[in-house]
Length: 312
Image (cartoon, rainbow, N blue to C red; front, side):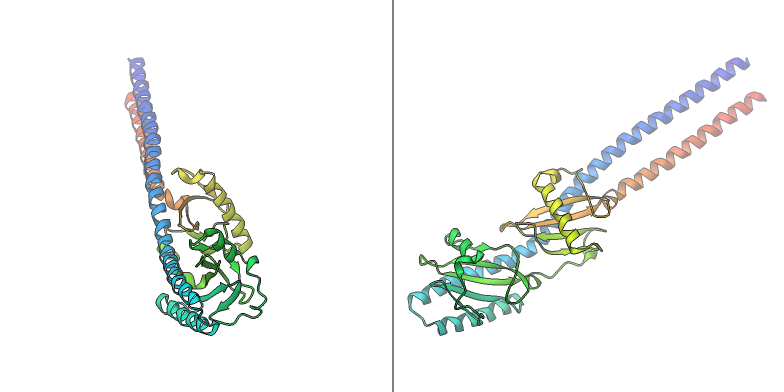
């Protein structure tokens, strides 16, 4: 009789163990499915946030684009009418004031290369000897043949400030109108609190130079630049076109990477810590661990209860 009872107890224990194993397998599968679903949703969210941040920059860039096109038409007309250099300089000064007022800026600079001579709203020291053929903005505008161009960011040798130039060829004589824009005038930065917890945002030019960034990193500027170059290389390789991709940040932690491209080649990059991305999965994971421990405890109690009852 006791042998039958022991056999019955063993069967119950084995059945309980099978139930437990089934629960574990089911939990693992469901966690993987939930993780994939969350990452898919985060991929869309990350791309939308990155694009939202870029739209603000595109809005101002399109305004500069419009101002350059409008000014080019007027300037070409004035050149055809043989206006004096003094008249052109006065107009550029007024137009600069107009742009600053419209865009709430202070340091935008308008100038032109007419017959390869610099004429600007403000005086350039050495503008009489300035060689426009060596200027990036001049050569890019010539090659663009009437389309608006944007240079990569650079440090202005006159002001010492970092900015970029928007320029356009205005006639077949290769006269060029240009507008210098400085980075601190470009955009009102988002607050870090408006981004997902622990996130970092970088706006970069075509060459990967950081135009501006929003982050809480304590690393040096050089370290951040190396890190961003690595992330941009991964983006170009297509690594971050899938939801479960990640990069390793400067602290050795995983981050999801989401990006958007502007019409002038700038790239908006948002990185979010995996700990933030998978916080919901962690909560579910802890829930399953709790259930698992509870089932084990219940199983042990039932097993020893049956043994005690059998002894009686």
